[in-house]
Amino acid sequence: MTTRFSRRLSLRLVAGVAVTLSSLLMSGCADANTHVRVPETRKPLAPPVNADNQRFADWLTEFRLEAMKAGIRPQTFDRALAGVGPDEDVVAADQNQPEFVKPVWEYLKGALSDKRVQRGQAALAENKALLDRLEKAYGVDRHVIVSIWGLESNFGDFMGTQSVVRSLATLGFEGRRPDYGRTQLVAALKIIQAGDVQPEEMLGSWAGAMGQTQFIPTTYLAHAMDFDGDGRRDIWHSTADTLASTAHYLEVSGWETGGHWGYEVTMPAGFDYALADMSLTKSVGEWSKLGLKRADGRPFAATDAQAGSSLFLPAGYKGPAFLVLKDFKTILAYNNSTSYALAVSLLADRFRGGGEIRGAWPLDERPLSRSEREELQTLLTAKGYDHGKADGIIGYNTRKAIRSYQASIGLPPDGYPTSSLLDRMRAK
Ligand code: CA
Image (cartoon, rainbow, N blue to C red):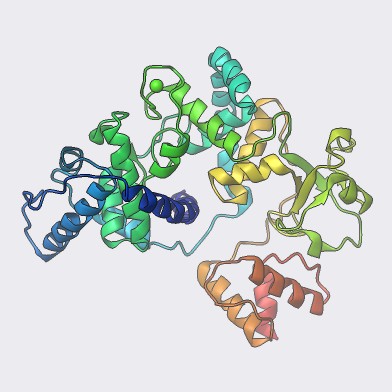
């Protein structure tokens, strides 16, 4: 559980960095027009008791000037950061690059538990009137909104208990991506300054994902909504604001009203597995001509014939296959993990009584650990399949190199790294 949670958060953090850079540029433009009196001296916020605290106090002094330039008032800053020191748990979480990952089938088992399905169905009934209004306002399927709510915070049960201000100050001070921490902390202070939430109520994850929607502060600033009309965007306490914020974020990320995420499919014998890559898009009609069929035997919806879609094999050619449409890719804006997007999609279907997977998972395969992934990359390079740096991250170039190697030894080139493939590479 901890491993998956950390991985999810680091993925979110990676997605957050892109936001960070553009927000930095944008706030840079705004700065020129913002005239804020910057006080020259201030009281230390916490008495320095050792060298680390002194370093943090120095960092805070410098960051305070940056925040003032971005339009944060001194009283907002001093109230929010009063007594705040670095959080060792946040540093540890930030530096922990998990060695092991759960197989996708185990992750899905937890994500799609009967209990979560039942709670989601109850939430759909309880919030029917609200969801009617949300579908009208944002055009996003209610089942997906509630599914994301269930996976992000278990319907508001687990929002994280850490002070977002303290976590972000720690990441800005000594995180692996200090720019992320600084940008997000400025955004958090803007939220506090707008009166949406008190600093001590601003709780979330160690990485600064906040409230029931798990928005990072820049995402909150851009997309959070006040849907219950009390003048505050409250993703911590208000179900209406939480679900509207989620729906709004999906709408602006490109959700297609009336669309759907995709289908479980089967491939014909002799299918070219090199085509199974999220970066490759064909229309459902084209896939159909290549012999793809729905796993449940029904025909593809005629309205999807021209729809762009990609073939996604979450566990390689031995496992279930999915043809994913545009709305699936929109869910990735929320959390850039294909396993997460699949869980959101299937959970939404389970609320409606579907979402069962027909294909069998390759239970005898296990995902490679981080060091095994690095070893696989090193072996690929040694065999002349170039992919860049051996960093343990299986990206497009690594998948391409794996495909070339698989093809050279007569295996289906699905680009999927498995323990059996690694064993084979070690032996040769
Ligand atoms: Ca509100």
